[in-house]
Length: 304
Image (tube, rainbow, N blue to C red; front, side):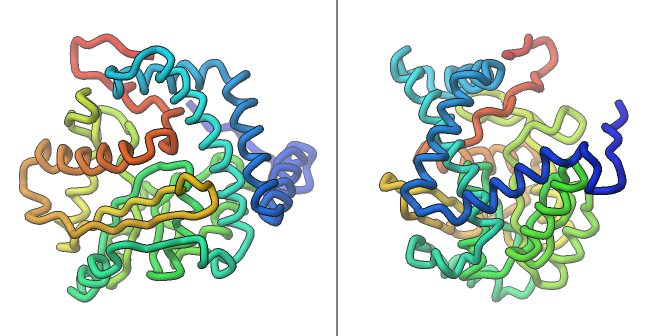
């Protein structure tokens, strides 16, 4: 299916809504912190109320991953997920539109020595991150401690793609298209840290099935492939909003040992074990709104 065709001129009326959204992000970025949180919460509640398709996907994911929770707990977790992701939108605006230096007092970084040790090996580093609602603000705050590149999915809207790429290029050394494997390998081999999130379902052709929350999840093979091509250590990284909703914690873990192992399923399982561990700390902050389990093993019916 061909992509939507957009006008060349950013002054075209087709982009007026995009300009409005960008302007709103700049405004949100400069709101007082308490008001920022309130706006994010309200956006999350509106989405929870009206985005029925996304609510269904979220509820399905959480039912699959947390079957031990009763109906009331499931309901609350779905609602809390939308609130957390609404707050994540204004956090993204803050990370993109303001200097992270002004928020240094809001972040605590545990395990810096693990990333420093991996970097000192001189082979570059592949950092495994996760799609939490705090992801973009987390990247900005992480840049206060370690410069890094980021792998991302380009936006279809050319104006928003330009805005997003410029913002991320200010935060990161380079913003690398997720399809640019050579670019990722080149930057790692040059000694850079590259931040990469392998926790989404990219389909059967590029994945193996590995356990995640007791479900067989299509897990991309690229993490092990990049490590094999570069010889770089693979370092897991977690980032969470603390319960006070005003401070954040970055937690870096030691690099995976004997990775890649040569067994694709074992490697993918180890990545998923880390992802599950990170999500269980603050499950409402994860991006449950995407169809994480859309690709099923042969013969299994779909969940969504």
